Length: 154
Image (cartoon, rainbow, N blue to C red):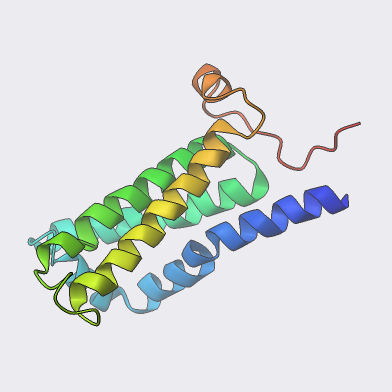
C-alpha cells in the first residue's frame, strides 16, 4: 500500500471510529440504555428499538463500506444523512432555553454536539462528491460504485 493510500485509510478510519467500533459497541452492550435515550424522541418502545437497530446497521455497514471502498459514496451519503438526522432529533440546543444565559448549560453543550454532527456530515459529503471537481455526477451516475479510494495514480 502506498503512503498516500495509507493516509486515505487512516483518515477514513478516524472518520468512522466514532461509529465503528465505538457507537456499535456502546449500543450493543448498552442496548436498554440506547433504547431509553431513543425514547426521548421516539416515544413508543417498539419505534425506539427499531431506530436503534437501524442505527446499528447504518453505523456498522456504512463504516465498513467507507473503510473498504465498497459502495463508499452511497455509504457516506447514508451515514452523512444519519449524522444530520441525529443532530436535529437528538441535539436540539435551540429548545433548551439556556443557550445564551448559561455557558455551562445544556443548550451550549448540545450546540457543540450538534456542530460535531454537522461537521461529520460535511466530511461524509466530501466522500460522496469527491475532491476532484467532478461533483455529484459520479455518485448520481452510479451510486453504488466505489470511489476507488486506495487506487494509486501514475
